[in-house]
Image (tube, rainbow, N blue to C red; front, side, top):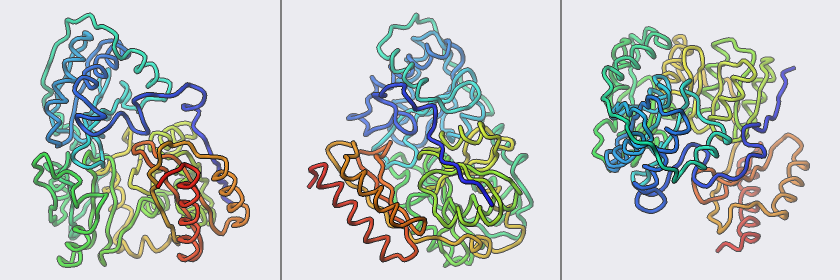
Length: 437
């Protein structure tokens, strides 16, 4: 019998409230929640925190990227560090090649008007909440000046060579549609699959600064699904704007989500432990229990999944949303590494056949815009009551978003109608208790 553990990350316990950092770095609408001044201050503070060494800087393809990269660079130089500019780079490449510090100007899967800053330490690891609080405490602190700027050489080639060597396999005979989300993988991903022998149709690979994640990529599979069906592809792969998320589409044009991909890879790789989040489908847990694979469950956020894997000695984990992690030869979640692992795990089978091994409970989700992200006692009590009543044949989950001003409601049940009803009733309660319209 497999064991399922629920782990609430120690990194967030009792360290105080962060002002700027959320679930995954700092992000906001450019000119409103996120300004060049704040980005400069964050660059200075992060560099001071890290010891004023060499800082690899990458960015995605947003139009605001160059100006914010310049602001970040000013902060690094003012703190006495060396800004090593990599230009447009996927987030996992910055993590993998991080020097004394790695900084990425990106808002990941968010719309084009957003941007942000992600931070990696010298090991390529995302920071703990305590680390982020220490950086926030240095925001506004003066720097000694005297830093410098360099331009990184061959970083894309180094990154591509690494992922191909560590995760690649013979893809000859596969026809793959690759949706690059008009993001950081646009000039990279199609070539990786072609290098391994696949016949590739590239989609959303012409970024113009304002089309990142716009009707494409892992947040909107509609275009990829249509292309796969129309072109007779074996499968489709979709990344998000900075390349740390990946979702798939089978040959019939049906979505294969992160839970299914983790399941396929875990079974193929023969692991005895996986780490996932509280959003993961109950069908995944049932499959892992049947196969004797221990499941560690964390709060939402790929850094918590990463923490659990490192702590427990695991190799594979991820989120339903597409943050997929394979640590054999990497330090963080990586869309291309995950896609290549998935292709290798198929072992010649159609993706639909491989995905069918995991039963999926119907899920219903709603995002409730509220004045405050606090979850009130009436909601908490009702969620506890419903989960006790469901007794494992379904569940309700309510949590504040770490990246948007919404409370997320998830309901899961054996029948879609029951899941939708549960979700709607809890969402209404959230609105009423918060005084939202």
